[in-house]
Length: 329
Image 1 (tube, rainbow, N blue to C red):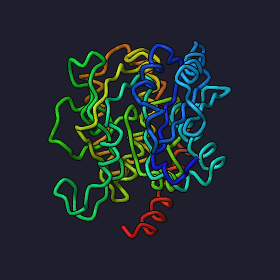
Image 2: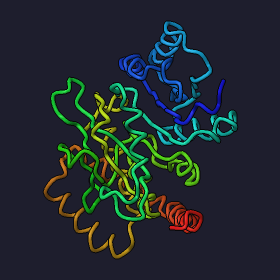
Image 3: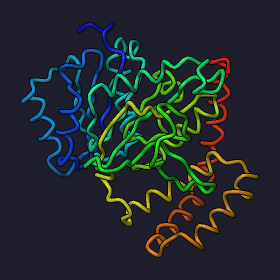
Image 4: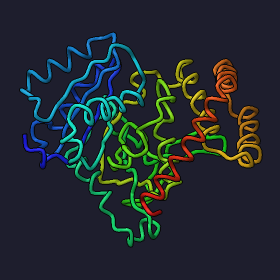
């Protein structure tokens, strides 16, 4: 195996993904991607996801030279699974390979990526700081693409944004060929590998899913990086394949992690002057009745874990200071 040929580490985290995983893997042209190393890490699926993956590997004669399948004994969540693939597998088991990797790409198992999109995604990081697409002195820290509904009838994600109370929403129209956004979805997400490594990966406290990518984007923006969407990166996405969107479970995880993200990143003045008024207004005008129990659960749980999250907040601050000094930002 020529380690010098690998520059991109691509991770797919699966959980009960048997309906989609083969199409996702097929779209990646694994055997033909000579500069990518692929890892599929399964969060202890209860369906036949593992069998589908192993069957695909056998059918297409995919070797271990650029592919690894990892089956976890329990569901540790999306963020922790990504960290496991990066730190427990790549860095610990293949240290020589990890030193060659420049970019990390994350894909949901219900994503079908179009040809040349991975190379176009990586090309986003090569934008010169003098480009008028990004602010002077800022490098690209994370990037995403244009994601369509599975039948490609309409845009599902053209970048992410959020309101004052961190209610997130997807941009549904493009702002140019390459443009800055607040965050990009973890369904199709790329970042500098060294940056991800230096930040210690995703915050696994956002379990089992939601807000880990927003948390990461907030962190790297604070350090001085830009988040970009490249519309030459195209994919189709089923959406919420492991947790049905707008189900009680979805609201439970979404609001729990939304409140946690606010605690970790918003200053006290912002919390009281922006977040709280926006939250009260949203509760009065927009929150639906099927979210009430999930919201009460989220407020209570985050109150219970407030001391712990304040420690995480302090650790993040110290990590930012160290990394900014290291990067001379």
